[in-house]
Amino acid sequence: MDQPAVLPLVVLALGLVVFLLLSRPEGKSTSPKVQQRALGNGQEKVLEQKLLSMTLGNRGAIERGVTAKRRQHPRASRAELLEMVYDDYVKDRSR
Image (cartoon, rainbow, N blue to C red; front, side):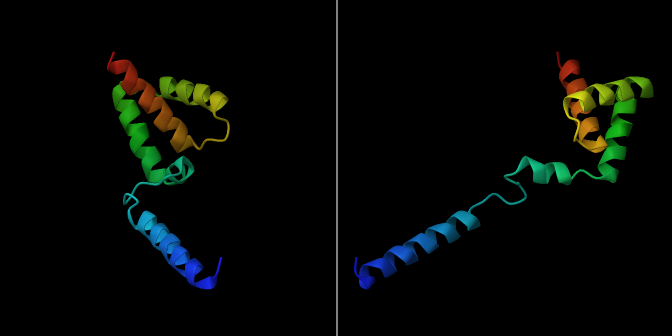
């Protein structure tokens, strides 16, 4: 291939990359790990309060749920585990 034919292909490829980067949805991460890291101490307290409300203040039930989830996901943070327990309670309530 000669150089004049390569230049348009390079420009087209760069344009496609820029278009794909600009067309990504805002605020949505493509990686679940990025979303997991976003859970912080504030989120942990909010989830804990929601769970306390759902379990009528039964902290033992929450801790048992967190312990069970920790066995399945040993590297997850407490906030992530609380979110999993909360999701399970919401699923059970909808049945």
